[in-house]
Image 1 (cartoon, helix red, strand yellow):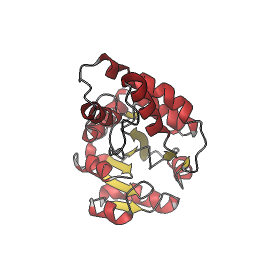
Image 2 (cartoon, rainbow, N blue to C red):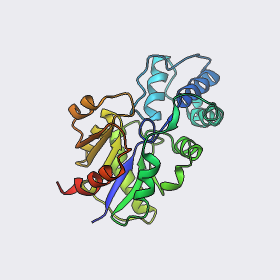
Image 3 (spheres, rainbow, N blue to C red):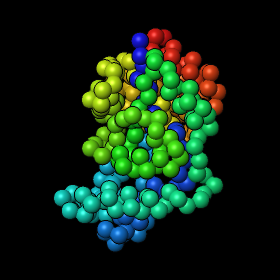
Length: 232
């Protein structure tokens, strides 16, 4: 049996040193003349569409504003600049590259993305760290503010791009927030959590993750969990 393994990006695969938030704030200011528009707003685990919708509501931007439709392209332009800036909290997360190298040749695992990022932003971030090449497809935050819809969207995208056909029960979501765990649980998928984002191990366990790691650096152990979890 083949298992679909869906990776989150921010806090799970990489940290961008705040490039995404800076680029979002710059884009919002450019379009709506509102500086620091996302101050105090929760970001971790949310889709970009969800974050933008909340910011628009807080700052009184009408939902039918044409500028909202332009936000992703303006954000991407700023992100392409911000992602290049050095920052002490900008890196590939521990063990990620070795894990992806280990998963790539396996025929019992199919790797894809389930991320709240706009697809173009996800590609830009992962290409910057030379990780995009590991992921043939995925589900992204462009079309929906609802993170819980990412699992079925990812399954459909895999099938549509010539990959295997999966059920949600054949799927593992790897993420760093309780929202990633809830996304898996909403469809009876398994959830593997990693405490490389803003949430500690105990909080991720309490949220109901099927397995929790401090990070992904113990490749053999992570592989053991990923290849045994659907049957336990």
